[in-house]
Length: 116
Image (cartoon, rainbow, N blue to C red; front, side, top):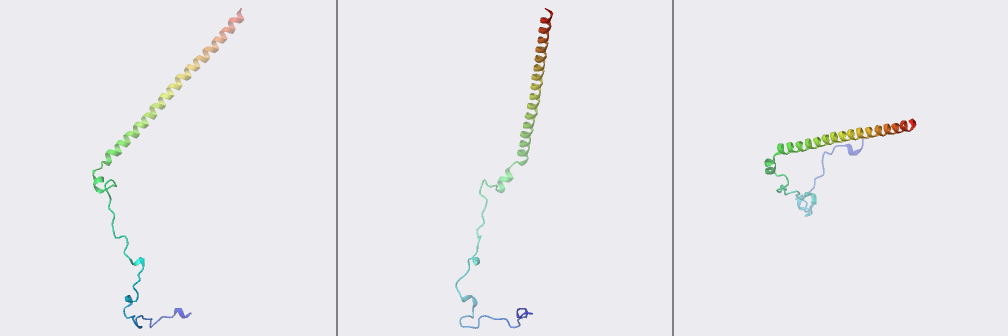
């Protein structure tokens, strides 16, 4: 073992020299870490969510209103989709009938011309 591992039976004691009787009187210097810090509490100002503001707020009403708005938006999207599908179906049927009517007209012209 080293000497550092041995116990000290007679520890060193300060205050045996001149002016060392009161250890706190040795110096007038002190650390900034010894100073008190954070000595003032900050309180919430009006508009920052004070207790009175939370008590007077209608959370359930706000939640229900937001849910109604979302439901309306979903309904709008659903109706828009249905309308779009309906319009595309009508357009497709119209194009389909026009296409086949033009083919039948061309066929009738060919038969008409070939008969002559």
